Amino acid sequence: MLEREDVIAYNETQRETVPAWLQERLEWFQDLKFGLILHWGPYALWDCCESWPLSPGDPWARNDEMDCWTSRGKDLALFQQDYWALNKQFNPVNYDPHKWASLAKKAGIKYVSLTSKHHDGFCMWDTETTEYRITGPESPFRDDPRADVYKGLCDAFQAEGLAISVYFSKADWHCPDYWSPEFPIDSRQANTSHDPERWKRFVQYTHDQIRELMSNYGKIDILWLDAGWVKTERNEDIDMSGMVQMARKLQPDLLVANRTVGDEFEDFITPEHEIPTAPLSRPWESCLCMAQNWKYHPRDTYRSTAEILEMLIDIVSKGGNFLIGIGPTPDGEFTPQAIERLEEIAVWMETNSEAIHGTRAVAPYRDGHVKFTSKGEYVYAFLMEGSEATLAALRPRSSSDVEILGCPVPPKVLEQESYTVVTLPLEAKGLAWPPVLKYRL
Image (cartoon, rainbow, N blue to C red):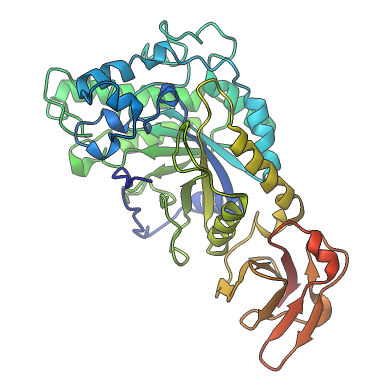
């Protein structure tokens, strides 16, 4: 996988005070543990990453492995022209959000985020702010009853009891009040922020889009704001205070992740393409792909189910949430590889979800090959290797108190002076990996 320069380090700045209502919502968020993010739009038609190749200042996003780049003679102007015309081809005729929601729920996923708008400016909802949208006059999908993709997704996932996190890019490279063709465009930054009238229009445009998303799609739980360079310190002030105040008037329980900025609107932090080595001082969510790319790529390689479960357990044992990324195909489906992994995760979750959802970290988080979570008076121990665990840091209260999730036969427990050895019975061999112990300290 090529090194990506779009990943900005998360900001762990500690907020001095958190209002009681927000602390309660953050506790709710930390109970969820497992979320799904979907990068989907016209860019699914090409073998590039989402949006980034459009930016002249981001050459890392254009390489010779991309047919869509080399077939245009590496001509950026031609590439941009054809990329922004992909909306005329994007026709997801197989879109079935109810199938997505069912797969996600069975896999233990508790919340979903779809890219309502990535940096390229294409809107996946029926917005009145621009014609560059899934229901726009140039979209072949515009007359389909499912054309408001975002409404379909929200309705389907809400019906399954999942929470909605709205991904929204604060940047908009298609909007002439952000990237104006009248001025040089040489970076991901706006080239209009020096022009008060243009910038005022862009801020209003942004607020209008957020108002639509907060008004027309049922209960929204999280506003997940990308493009961390759009901030006052970079001369791109979009009146975050006014925007969040408006959004929370419409959605009173709304959490906001103003990613990587470190201001009062970053309610939780979002490490990307990494799992912290230890618990963080604030609520957090690690964002990692199921494959190698956020979006669909025809030549992608997928992580194994075992690796995904290991990542989930590692993150949750440190008190974080895992936001896993899947890229739907251009015609609106999950790939067979993604479906297979979700179904395999579902098998494990059917037995072991109580050791994930609603849990908290418990020091020292791991002991050798064993990782831990806790809930109330119980500790859960994940046996990441073998069928035997030596528990020294977090020992069971008594030998009769240890059970194996999903197995009616208790383990063999040998208590020593400074540690306890737990051995799984033969009846546990049929359990999905990794097996989980449950006991009280």
